[in-house]
Image 1: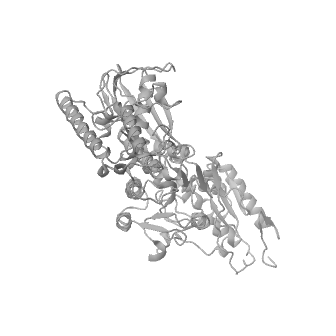
Image 2: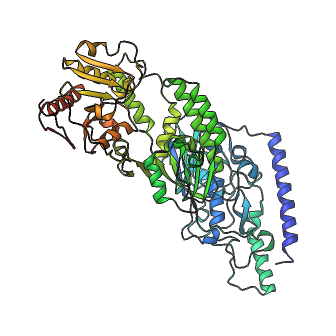
Length: 627
């Protein structure tokens, strides 16, 4: 073998260069026009779909590095192909669309078939994609213009069935065309590569074996001849006849007698790594990280809040082995946020843009070894669009309802409150909404303490306990007589149920209402309530011991921290189901938008306050003696 390798390797490289030069000349005279991504054909029916397993079963641990590299290369190529739209008769060329498999373009070392052996090679593993593309195109009835079969055909493989297509930059290509416009969709989930073709003509579901229309001679076409030479060389050198022949799939990583030129560097990768991609900290998720992080895990966060004493980003990083932060992006977001109003479309657009930039930076920091991700929900749609979640097991730390559910809730609120200037001021890009929905559907597990959010994912939600403040030592004083003292722990804004609370209080019963924030629904919003005998105090948050109940009939509320503090302090809470506290003792849950239900809950509170030693679920009111 030692005598054979230098000569054969030189010949191989020379022939490859000749083939590449010939292809380059052909493409110069008859160029293929690359397609562009679009959404004009997104509603066409799915003509065919091909699903290919990503991971080998019973993988030798020594093969893991190349297996991870293969999946990373598929991620990079999928990003280049997903969403491409083709005109009728426009030619699809694998290499015209994917481009050269170079390290600077994100490709890494993967499994590559070279001269009959599976060896480490940059861009290795792309044949899984070309196989899937060929299968989908054949089943869709497309015209195959160029396709090269693998020379090795293990029993039971696609090659043995004649449903494979190998590629090698740039001269071994896969090309096909269709008589009608069509759209290509390529993505990875945790276990499979999925290739879909949308076209006006539906597939009949039959398998079609399409022969080679045009083929150049490649090194793989000489694989059998090469293997025979290697066999003779092994016999001359006294090699064991049981040495691996390249037929069944292992590579040089686990070969007993690897050839010198393909011997990989030493590696210690024997298992994947889990990375945590987080943004603002929630105590529930900080506790989850503490309980489940491993020393070999990686934590990607905006800044090290523990080190810099910034509570908003104070993720506990002591249990992870590697931490990475993005201070420049975080500073830019902070400065931009201060320049924007606290509400409105401009602020929401800026927040989404900063989330996109942070997600892009974190995606670039991921490595092929990162096989498990725990991701903040705000980053999920951007990571999905970037292709960074494919081929990985993903858990999502939910920080709100899914965008589709959130916007449906806001649409219903706006229908009930058409005069509100804040309920319809912003809606996310439908592309982003779709990306989040697809990513959440592909996620392995959804984590949330919010009851309504968990209900959106009955099959895979893991409901966490809300983090509750410790009860204060100070006991609530007996209540003085008088009308109910209520606190709305938010600004006057329609999505927090301000309109429904105003209507529920307009029945003529006296009450005192503190409003914690500003009046964002316009001046005079509470005039009708004040005329009905409600004393409204704006912009103040009294001590919890001074109020009888917190009321938040919100349409949207994702972090009910003020309500949890009230529960811990023994103060009754009236809240909508949208606040996510269903089942929490001391909370009377009402339906969002249901004024009668809210009015009934307020009446129950008044009855409890007016009766000596009356009880509220989880609480007991005691009036002052002699009152």
